[in-house]
Length: 424
Image (cartoon, rainbow, N blue to C red; front, side):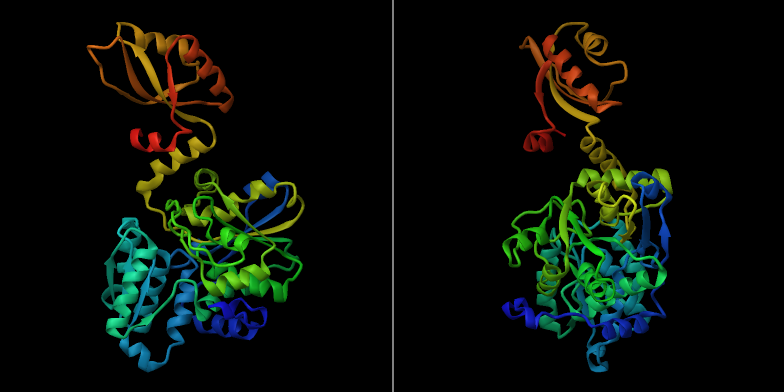
């Protein structure tokens, strides 16, 4: 919709509309705390406040937009029912709203959605919703949901590119501004399709124009950053799906237009850095957040000098994290921090070769965490895939040097993504 990109025709949520949304959702949506993080405040020598949307009943901010949209529909549309597509959090918000409002809903989710999110969606919706798993990505589910909508005459509840949804998410900004007497210097907010950031940035530009607004998306799914660079909405061919709550191939048209006008900066954060933040929050603050929920805090390292002595707000957007993902989260964090390395190691096929590797190649603090070896009787050397965890990233170069001097070095796998995925 090119007309939305014309500045005089850009949809902008009004202060009055957002106040009405806040009133509409007040009976079902929690007014979440804006709490100081002592850990991050000390680390960055700043006043870091966390807007704890992970404490919503559906454990994410998505209930705001979903409930605002559905509750604003006319009676005749509600009687037909609603439909949506979601990777998880929006689905739970729609399910919760359907149950509260006694509206029939059909919810399409990718087949790759973590089991925990699927079960939560069904639990919140109860007998009022039908969950359909379809496709591998949100975009696959979206296309299937649109076909279902057209054939059954349902109302589609978009997860981000909808005016009422944006206004619902914007209520977070009103709460933040009401919860602090100090001027906010920076606000960091995660972005997937852009509904949250479009709403929040609109209110901050009206009510706190001096606040710097920083948007964050995963490095493997830079949909908004790419679109802003190109000056138009761009659909990415391939994305990394690990941050399932914020990985979309195409941002919303309304959201793009608003963010293009409001954002001070749009950055991407590596998935490994996000994983490290998840582990830090769990270990240091007893907070369980999902990858998308950790994105705002993950960005602070890249602004360490700029935010020193400043008042900073980070939106913790959700905590729908499946416990079975923790092993992968730890692995990604170790890889990012330079503490986990995988090699093809060439072992001479003789007695004592492994003992020599352990005694003369590994450092005193190095630990083998992965080992795959198949003995080849007709060859003098046999390759093994070996994973080594270090205590200090500075131990990496000496380790490689010892492997080469002792003729054990075959290939380093961390920098070879295709081979890494195949072997590990």
